Length: 304
Image 1 (tube, helix red, strand yellow):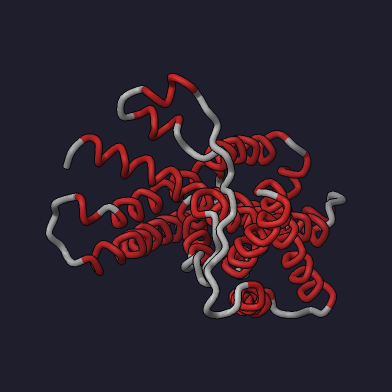
Image 2: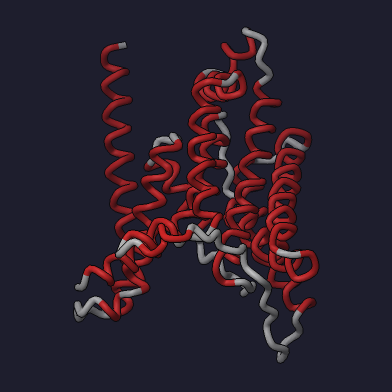
């Protein structure tokens, strides 16, 4: 394979990793607080739809805002059902996913009835970095990305700083480690968990809009293609840390970019194998990571 092809694969990997990293950072906060959001897929797909719908009327920036609000509202609904009505968090998360998938398809069909051409909207405008984008090979790969890719990098740094140096980050870690001890020290576990889920919901909705408004500029039912579940795997692989989540997102993005450009690699393998490669490798890494974590926990129990 040529160097130019590798540069294209790596550039695509960064673009594909951005929505996974954005949603993963939100889920990292949620799981650090001792909760689990299985509704990420539904929040992402509904965020992708509302993002395009709002962008068609008010522009792409309004689309991003609408997507984040959509994810926040779904997280608010999940908090209400779990905390007020004592519903099972796993069941509610799965219901949110089914609601998002079904409602986005229904609203899309109301907006664009069958037989009509799909509506395209302007994507987030790229920033002109001048001569930096003309650097051979790495110019387009690093400096020719959508602003949402750079926003994802800033978000990772901000999440790391919040987790390490703020009172809210300390509360999340305390509640996730031992809610009873945290409550004795004046922390309200339910309030901390609820705020973490709202952050996770807003970022999941924003991640959906990153897919629809970052490059494509339109919505198609089911366009998130299970990325919400991949986000859950990435958060586990990355041990809920911002850096680990970013590395997991880049790994999946690289494999997906490689599979998309598989026809240009010159390696004569079935296209179905390329399509399953990202999910297969993610599954293997997830199993290995989980085994390592279980061994460490067993070692701590032996010395306790």
